Image (spheres, rainbow, N blue to C red):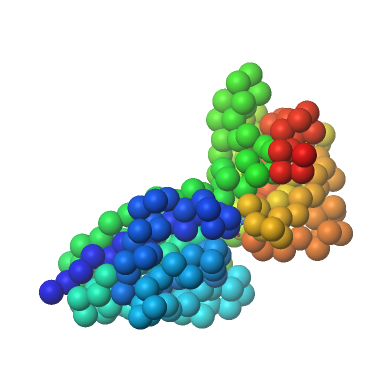
Length: 251
Ligand code: SAH
C-alpha cells in the first residue's frame, strides 16, 4: 500500500496564515517533513505519535540534499504513511515543490498540492504594501536573487526586469546579499534612483523588521541595519502607500 504525499504550504510565518486544508493534514499526518521557514507553532498541532523530521536548509548549509529529501518522501509513502511535506509560504513559489512532485510522480507515488500564502504577497501586505494598486502598479513580478550557484552566468535578464519595473512592482526573494548588485543593474537600465523600495525581514512574525529607502539608498541602509535572511525586497511606487496610511501593523 502507498499513501499520498501532501505538499503543503505553511504560509509566510504567522501561524494563523495556513489554510484550513493544510492544518487538517498536519493534524492527521503520520510523518511531517518540514523546512526551516515554517511557523514552528504548527508542529504543536501534530498527533503525539507523529514523526516530525527537520529537513530544513540553512542558506549556506544544506542539512539534507534535495535528492535525500525526495528519497525520504518516497520511502515514508511506501511504508503506508500519510506524509506531509510542509514548506514555507507556497510550495510552488521558489520552494522546490515542483521537483518534489516530479520525484513522487516518477516513483509512482500519488501526491496532492495544498497551496499556501506566499511570502511574496503576504510579507509586503504585513508591511502595508499592496503589490498592485489601480493606476500605480498593474503587474507584479516575483524574482529570485539567489540562483543555482552551478549556473555559469546570471539568467536574470535585467532589461526585461526593468521593463517589468516600469509596469508595476518588483518583489525580490532570497536576495539580501545580492541587493547592491541587483539595484545597480536596475539603475543602469534607467530605473529612477528615487523609486521607493523596502526590505522586510521575518515578515508576518513578531520579529518583523523593515528598512525603507529608494532604489539608490536601500542597499546601504539594509547593510547598516544588518538585515538577514529571511528577507524580501519590494521595489515600486506601491511602497509609498505605506506612509499614506497603509502601515496597519504599526497603527
Ligand atoms: N515558498 C516560499 C519562498 C521560499 S524562498 C514562499 O512562497 O514564501 C525563501 C525566501 O522567501 C526567503 O529568502 C525570503 O526572501 C522569502 N521569505 C520567506 N518567508 C519570509 C518572511 N517571513 N519574511 C521575509 N521574507 C521571507
